[in-house]
Length: 162
Image (cartoon, rainbow, N blue to C red; front, side):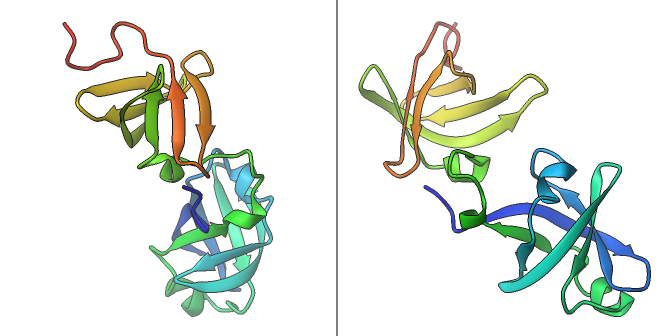
């Protein structure tokens, strides 16, 4: 199911005296977060400008002009508006609860997405538990609007197989 907001990072500290915050991005990279000009924190919308510092982002939020105001945001989650993100992009949080089918038969629902260096792995739980690599070879279709994923299973994906 497409979510209205995507958790994109955590404000970990302040930067300087003019209200900038340092954000540890949860999206693919700091460059991705830098593409956006608005965000939401605790239900409040902010216009933002963003620059990259190593693997983090330095974010200036409109209306946050002092170190004290920025300090109050430490530990908060920065969210992006789903409508600002390309429709074809799918986030791990959106996959949780999606019904998974193999050969037309429902095998369970996505309960977790594990990130590994090569690719992510979907944990699907139903009568059995499956570990399905998130690659085109095995994930044939993902339709968030229909809450459906179609996969191709091979031996060894079922976690309780010998």
